[in-house]
Amino acid sequence: QVQLVESGGGLVQAGGSLRLSCAASKSIFSYNSAGWYRQAPGNQRELVASISRSGSTAYADSVKGRFTIRRDYTKNTVYLQMNSLKPEDTAVYYCNAHGTVIVPSIDYWGQGTQVTVSS
Image 1 (cartoon, rainbow, N blue to C red):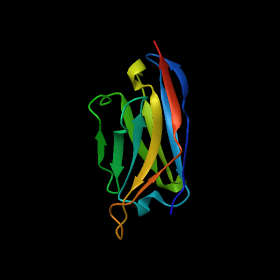
Image 2 (spheres, one colour):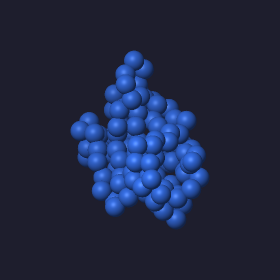
Image 3 (tube, helix red, strand yellow):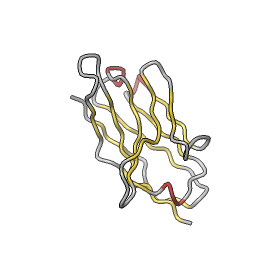
Image 4 (tube, one colour):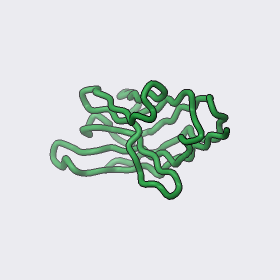
């Protein structure tokens, strides 16, 4: 089992930037993918960005060109760089580790970090 701890959320004006960090208690290479999800009030949790063990990345259409996901294996950390933030990016952002070779369907979640973008 892995523990995921997010940090870096906060209040920012529209057009600004934030970098979220997700520190894992064990090697993120152990998991098939890692990613960031978000959930705004009244909405379902949605995938924002993910990165696979091989390094392939995927982004929600709404954040393409503005957000970048990357990982640092030496620090067991996954980052989400968020630029040109919009009020609609306001949500709680959750870090996720998904799947292992033995249990492909397993998911681990962090506690979430609030991102608020003011207009």
